[in-house]
Amino acid sequence: MEPAETGRRSYAMTPDEFRRQGHEVVEWVARYMERVEDLPVVSSVEPGEVRALLPEHPPERPERWEDILADVDRVVLPGVTHWQSPNFFAYFQANASGPSILGELLASGLGVQGMLWATSPACTEIESLVLDWLVELLDLPDRFRSTGAGGGVIQDGASGATLCALLAARERVGGAAALGRLVAYASTEAHSSVVKGARVAGLGEDQLRLIGTDPTSRAMDADALADAMADDAAAGRVPFFVCATVGTTSSHAIDPVAAIAPLAEHHRAWLHVDSAHAGAAAVCPDLRFVNVGLDRADSYCVDPHKWLFTNLECDAFYVADRRPLLAALSVLPEYLRNPASESGAVTDYRDWHLPLGRRFRALKLWFVLRHYGAEGLRHHVGQHVAWAQELADWVEDDPRFELAAPVPLNLVCFRHVGGDAANQRLLEGLNASGRLFLTHARLDDRLTLRLSIGQTTTERRHVEAAWQHISELAGPA
Ligand SMILES: *Cc1c(COP(=O)(O)O)cnc(C)c1O
Image (cartoon, rainbow, N blue to C red; front, side, top):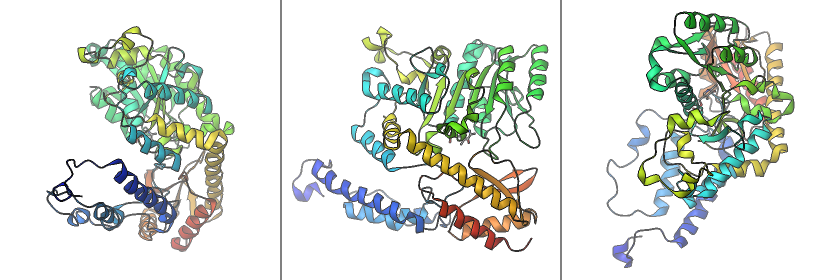
């Protein structure tokens, strides 16, 4: 609509226009859900191809909605890799789901900025509540509940959570003043975000020790950690932070948290458990081995945006004691002072992470938990794990393939016995087919295919079809 022609005084979209276009967009998304299964999973556009389809300059005149939406089909879709395809088995999933998308829509509609309790009490209180619900659903230790000394907060991702854990740990040993003597530990298989977080927290490269792993399980070698911490302490350095990973990104290895915890305690180091992907498994009582040792962790994170049907960004980050976190991150300028904060009776989540402004991210998680219920979450997560176990059996029964790592949950790491070149060809062939998407890792210095089963709408038939396709393309041993 062009105000000059219509005589309108405003360019704003009226509620009525919003209603009309909004219905169309919802319809578009619903149709996308219906057809995404049949779209080639991986986008095949060349670098620059998307941009080349669009004008180099922004529009001077308002554009028509039908033209804007038409460009979503013409320009955007071909350049999208379909993370929401049930044939997406790459990396770890980035789940979306109906209730989550609607929660995001409502959060956008309300458009609140929940930096302080006072700037929208519901934003804070629902967040604290759903994170307490998640403690119950995942059977996490009570010390992470907001009703005690600890509590949870929604972070943008596990990377941000790990950085905040590092900053809280640093604060607990005296803050930046002690920086030069601090040493942090994680395994060689830990996520790259630990390395990044350590860098951002001001640690030099020699202040993060990457501890070796067991050759079979790829879990952190707790004895090697004990030695490294003892050596550092003896040399006058301060072991201050240990990151244990439950479900590493390459192979889903599970660090022995119960053996690591007493070492951290002995040195008064902060224990952070990064369970970004695997933590969601704990919705199933029989998979709660992922929580072993957690009752002694200072902090913990899990990404509902990976494997709990909730859109990015939604990482649940918990601390057993919120004081060091708040001490590290609270800065109170005059313009944010308010009676509720000063009363001490409320939570101001701006002090729990780096950004000040925050969306109403709890809405989507709240909707997901209510839509699925505990039984729905158990049903889907449990199925993903069961199908991964089936796939692992198929791999083992095929002489052309071998499992490259144990399969405790829903990630299957396997390779063709024909060597790196054969696996590279297979991976490229599979992904070029458009019928599925897998990614790789290097395990034992050999190219390994990773197949993660965790997309919201994946069914057993998709896993079967994936294996059939792999099998066909693999050729003889
Ligand atoms: C995916 C992943 C991360 C990073 O998660 P983001 O939420 O994308 O920041 C960290 N650790 C592990 C083990 C992961 O699998």
